[in-house]
Length: 220
Image 1 (cartoon, helix red, strand yellow):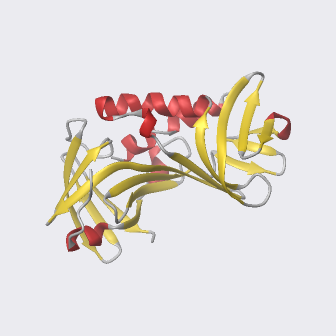
Image 2 (cartoon, one colour; image 1 turned 60 degrees about the vertical axis):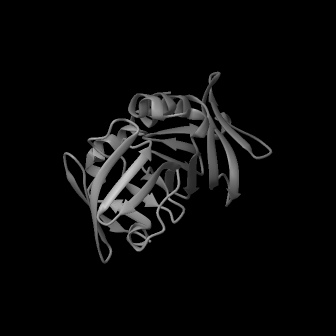
């Protein structure tokens, strides 16, 4: 499960560095929240953490802590162990692009402003975006439509978080969780739908799919 989630963006960030409705039943309310996967930092490529967000509207998102891979500094944009200087960063209104020798690495639209380049952005174009789309097409198959893809990146000092917003829909019935749309983070599905058993105990969520059991901890 960890490997599938990180594969959505990890390969894309490495490239950059190289220059339906949900249930409103009580059982559904228990699973609503932001849940962190355990030991996700060991899944590879520098991702420090991440997990799943179950919203109260029956939509689900995937988030990744990409702080060590992608953040702004006083000198420019840090990508893994490389700093792309401010000379490569161009701003026009709410649009920010990072262009290296004619290659657009990242194309962002600012949604919320903070100090300097920091803020919340929507990822719209560039090598990073194209690589993510390609990876998700491979994972999601016919259930994935890139026109529905909503990726935001929140930059805050030395930290960054990538969120794949409303990536899937979910319903719950008793202890059963059904995920439709992009269901690649669960094993045993048919590409359009996947099922798992879940158990909530305080701030702990246990998800059991066809191949593994994953324990997550509530973030908020």
